[in-house]
Amino acid sequence: MFPLFLNLTDRLVLVVGGGPVGRRKATAALTAGRARPLVCLEPRPADETHSSLDWRTEPYTAADLDGAVLAFAAATPDVNARAVADAKARGVWVNSASDPESGDFFPSAVVRRGDLVVAVGTGGAAPALAREIRRRLEEQFDDDFGRWMELLAELRPIVLERVGDAECRRQLFERWARWEWLERLRRDGMDAVRRALLQELHEAGDEPPSPL
Image 1 (tube, rainbow, N blue to C red):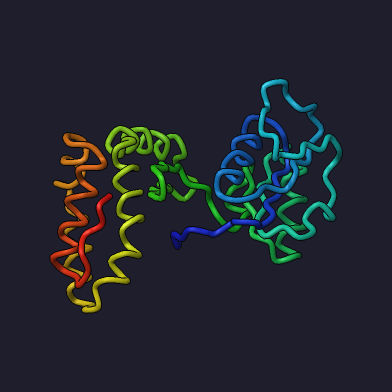
Image 2 (cartoon, rainbow, N blue to C red; image 1 turned 30 degrees about the horizontal axis):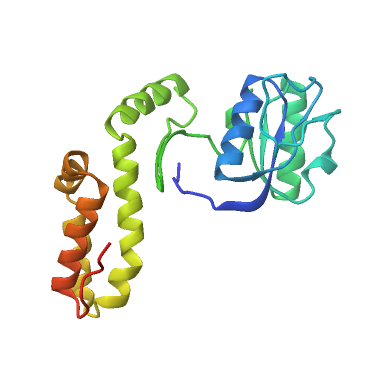
């Protein structure tokens, strides 16, 4: 397996099947970018609230893959087999819920904290184990970790602008990645850590620190 992160922003993702598995895939696709309408035989559940998800209650056809860059086959085994064959014929990466080995990729269990994405995969061999690992990671990477990530992302372009020396920038980024900053953020709050990081940036760069 070759792990990678796909940028699905404004890309079409087709989900075939509207059961619990298909709905999970559609929700994941919406989180990452833009999902193609579900194609299924089930009526739209009353608790399905994603307004950007266009639910189609109609049989699957190969034409549903038009414009898609990724597909999830989460219907019955026979429909999934047809969707996999159609997707491969069109060069669209596809995953089959009923026969994972027939597809091109295996979905991962994911932890999201802001821009941080941690994905766990078992090659389709033990999805339950991947979910358990994700649960443990969710306990370690809490919401404060997401705020730390937001702060680092906020300051990165400022560092690139103010610090001309590449080695100095590298050392600064490495210092800011130490776990002590996360503990300090938990203790003192976001604003205090921002001021401390900006002070370090001032000492490394040529401009006065921001008053933020």
